[in-house]
Image (spheres, rainbow, N blue to C red):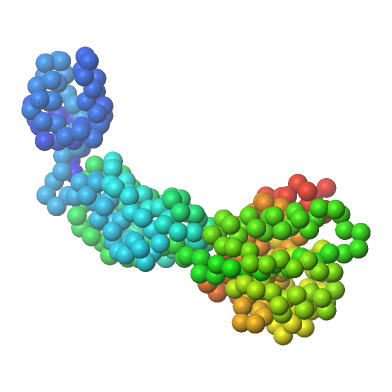
Length: 332
């Protein structure tokens, strides 16, 4: 693409680089100049106008953006995305369902190294999304890009952006209570958990409120419906052999992990029972603010594997905003 100033008589067919007001008429940047526009420029006494003119093999910005978006998302329905219409060199990718963002990070890096004018920006991996939320945006920065560069970019990232949809849509919740517990704590926990599930398009099938002891918690878990079991204890879990994890094992389940490098959210435990995931929620899950339990819950209900490596990797970026009501704040 050639870019620079030319006399108006040489600008026909080129793209106007900067908006110009000619008396009562506005010529907008990005407009292709025709005979009428050239005549208006000449009549207004304009001696020089900055334009962009495509060279052989160049692809105009909107066509290039549309092609790249189609290469990134060859099957929008399967990818859980909606591809927007190209405008001003941009195509937006919106979530078509609740879930978490899935990215081929290496492929996206490779795409963005091809040509400075060919770009893709996305949300961070595993960001929770709701229908309509912007997941990524393709932007062709100049008015046109070389076709060879566009072809290379399209080949480097096919299927690199998607939304992992929620596949586990029903959950059960156990709330344990301790003697002398603060009034309203149980109701607060239930409301917060319900709100989290609702944001994921899930339903809470049942809630069991039981004493904070192994036997009643285990009995409740064995009877609890749902594709995911959640446990929010009245007393914080302090060890893998504490009451909550022990109740899971007593109910015939297993506990794979206690503790995570995300704050708030350190005191989470994760296991299985009856062929379904069990998540022991930390006390901070009673607040609506983002915490480590959100990251685990979101991936689990989307059917993604959450093991030791995945939880360990959450530490980078895992220092989240402090919850004001936290009983033991990080500082102070």
